[in-house]
Length: 177
Image (cartoon, rainbow, N blue to C red; front, side, top):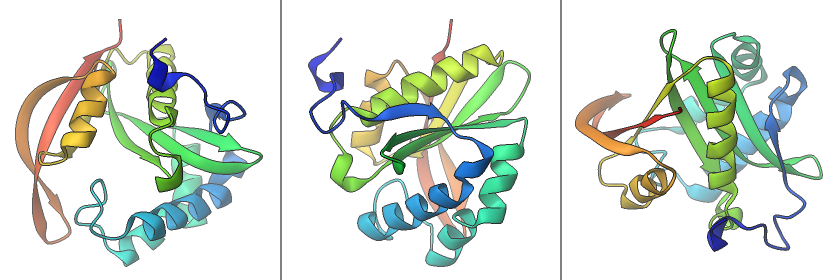
């Protein structure tokens, strides 16, 4: 195991697991906290606004995602508090999208993102997904480096519409077998 993914004293007690129905409210609190800590111009949140974040953080929205057969959310938690999440969305029988990976700013750099991605890949493979795609801002070198470190390969550049903005994006993929 690489040194950056070994549990530190602060992460040794972190549990990484698949989210359940009852996690909708704590997930909502996590999203609002992550948004507040990172700020609206933070990489990964490019183009999002407070209204969109509040909708994503709502109990109704998250409960519908947790109940969907095409979505799996993985969370990292310590003593019941969520520190990070990764979300997988099935896009076809054998393909999925890693549609979000967020770790609280104060927990960044401790290997939680890697643990979340590994668990998300395991969950995806167990559900029959053989190819996982992720998109991030094309100018987000940190995220691109993170995904490459976790086995994703750059495929193409594209443009994503987020609200009224067009954001240059990088598409990366990883085969799960």
